[in-house]
Image 1 (cartoon, rainbow, N blue to C red):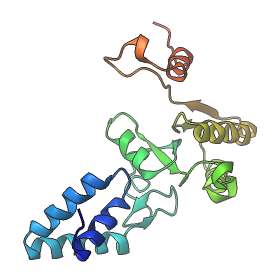
Image 2 (image 1 turned 180 degrees about the horizontal axis):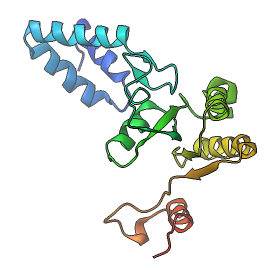
Image 3 (image 1 turned 180 degrees about the vertical axis):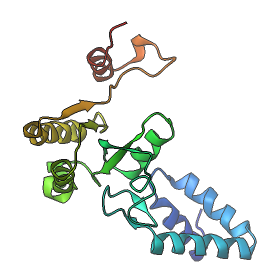
Length: 198
């Protein structure tokens, strides 16, 4: 089916968003067209406002509308523990657990030679400066268990070793309710490596 030009352009715009396929893009575009004009204007204004007011924290590089961000400026957070994540979305996932009480460092990516992303393209230098200048006792690496995540973790471990601080890594393994026979080999390896004494 051929869409009218404005609808086709709107669908194309939605398809540029991550994890949005053609059918979802079509559904979103058609829903937007049906919305009252004032709601569409409010939606567009909210997007522009977010784009224009959100930047990166000068300390941890989390997305924020103030700098330092809400986490870095919170006096109740443990400033001696830094959890290193790749992107703000990973920080949000950890914050939702309400378990971690330290601060963060958002790398803004992972080392990926295939994509031409090296250590100088992400916030490695800033992490090392924080560790050097502050009384950091532990750095927790919470990077994805991908090839890029593994490479970045190994690189950071090597750089952090001279500081003689605790460098730990979150355990990866089996999600609750899953069955061993359906788990892939890497998940099982990580589950075994992350085992804890009972």
